[in-house]
Image (spheres, rainbow, N blue to C red):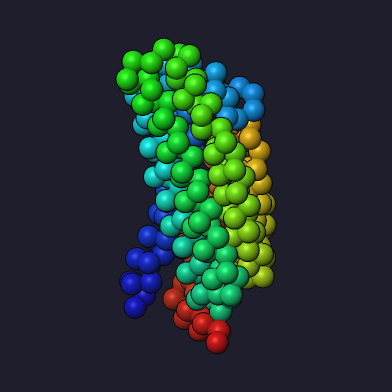
Length: 228
C-alpha cells in the first residue's frame, strides 16, 4: 500500500510540474506582440516571419492547456482525500471549460497561418486576423471568467485545507489568483509572461509539498477518509 501511495504521489508531482512548465515554455516561445490583443498587424508580421514557429507555438499552447486541466485534477484528488471535495467538485468543471475555451484561441490563430501558407501577402494575413476579432475577445474574456470561477474555488479550498506547510500553500494561492486574473488582461505581457509564471508559482510549491511528503498522509500516515 505504501508503495502504491508513493507511486500515486510521484505521478501527482510530475503532473503539477509538467503542466505549468509546458504552458510557460509555449507562451514564452510565442513571438512578442505589442499593444492590445488581438493586434492584427503584429500577428501578420509574426506569421510572415516564421509560419513553422507560429504553428508549433500555438499547437503547444493547446496541449499545455490540457495539461493544466490534469494539474487541477490532481488538486481535486487531494481535496477529495482530505474530505474537502465540495469546492474542488464545484470548481473543476469551470477549470475544464475555461481551459477548453483558452485552447480555442490558439486554434483561431491558425487562420492567419493558413492565409500565409496559401501565398497571401502581409496585408492578406492581417485581413484574416482581423476577421477573427469579433470572436477572439468574447472567447478570451468568456473563458477567463469561467476559468477564474474554477481556479478561485480551488484557491479557497486550499486555504481551508493547506497542502503541506501553510506558507507554501499561501504562495500557491497567490499564484492561483494571479493565474486567473492574468487571463482577463488582453496584453501580451499578461497573456504570454505573467500567466505562465503565475502557473509555475501556483503549482510548483504544491508539487514540492507532495514530493517532500508534507501532505497529511505522508510518511506512512493513513490517508484521510472522504467526508460524506
